[in-house]
Amino acid sequence: MPCLETLLSSLQDCVRAEPVIYKKLETGADDVALLRAFVGDRPTWRNPQHPWRVDSRFKLTGVPTLIRWENDTIQGRLEDHEAHLENKIDALVAGK
Image (cartoon, rainbow, N blue to C red; front, side, top):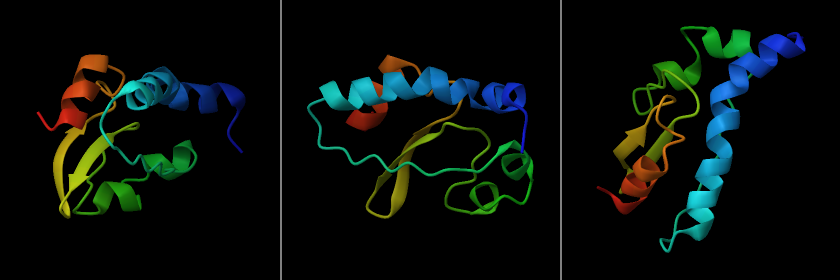
């Protein structure tokens, strides 16, 4: 089991982004379904063969990642370094 310090540092981007994401989706007028998928502990996520990293539909490189999925295709995405930015979340949800 990872030590608390390692666990917290790996979750830093998620901790920063999650409240912003939920706030924007709760106050938005659009009908949005949010699916939350877990990547596992840090060693699991860091494995280059992690299923979310190698899946041709997702190709995740960081967490959190927000993906706008529409009509069976990815219409937009926000990577870990931008998933906490309100204006970018608004644009993603609006399909801009």
